[in-house]
Image 1 (cartoon, rainbow, N blue to C red):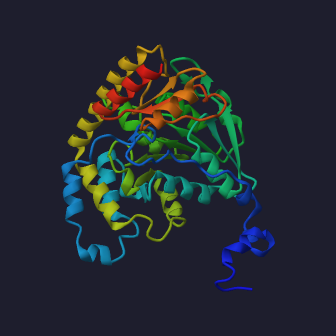
Image 2: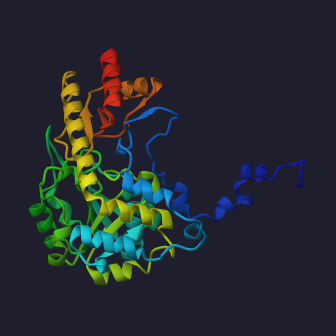
Image 3: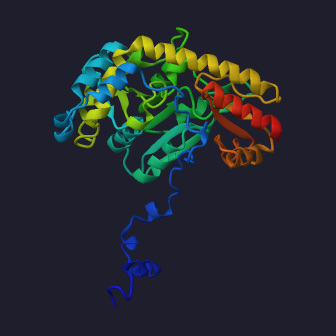
Length: 370
């Protein structure tokens, strides 16, 4: 019986009669990636977005987007954006691939290199999407635990010995904000019998005062190296969904075969190009964020909390057994931070650097709760 007397949704009560039974069993069984919470008008210190607006130059480009630009398909290979990225980072446009966020670039990497039966390895704890993408691709993800100390997380030496076709390192790491020195990453690239992916989503904060932390200048010396960047953090463009992949030109040419036809929309291409061309404003914004991080660190230290030395725009604070309680109480009061009920993380809160007034509100609430 069908029609208004029996809604079609009732079939969901009978799995054998629904389309769900045709899904891959591993997809049905897998745990989905859990993004940071979105909660109305809450103060969001849980997803590592930049607290400042995009540069005026970027906003001007947004306002100038015309009807024809929206009516027509975007450039399928993001030529202007790639030229701007090449000029900014000292590579050739042929070494750059644009993606719908660096998450899209990760998906392209998984699709291109990994088939069922292959392995991908990463240090742990780290960005949870690496695990989700492995499940989607039907490959094994190997976690190799960081060596944890109060102020530093050290890369495990066993990482290169996992027989993995792809090794991924977030640098600075998420959720710890710790960084691996360039010399150590270059040694790892030489040791890995596969591809080394260095996810540099937060690297601009590590380089705010002129330090050299990126692997992009070393692409030519390591043909198995892929470096990822995002506009979601330091460029204040998380809503635009834009990322960049850097690698040897032959790698990029083959990875481009796997991307979606028009994977970066016309608006994001234009905004990213404008952001890359406004380097002075970008650097000033990054330095302002680092200064605010240092101010927040001084305030949180008064509670006796500790964290690994941060090279990002966030802190992974050791709170102790009350971490979950503090997270829930802050949420009830309209402030979101990140907490994971998982081994190695359940006693910690990850706190994004916000605007001064938001950070002051956070500190005031912690003072009441602590």
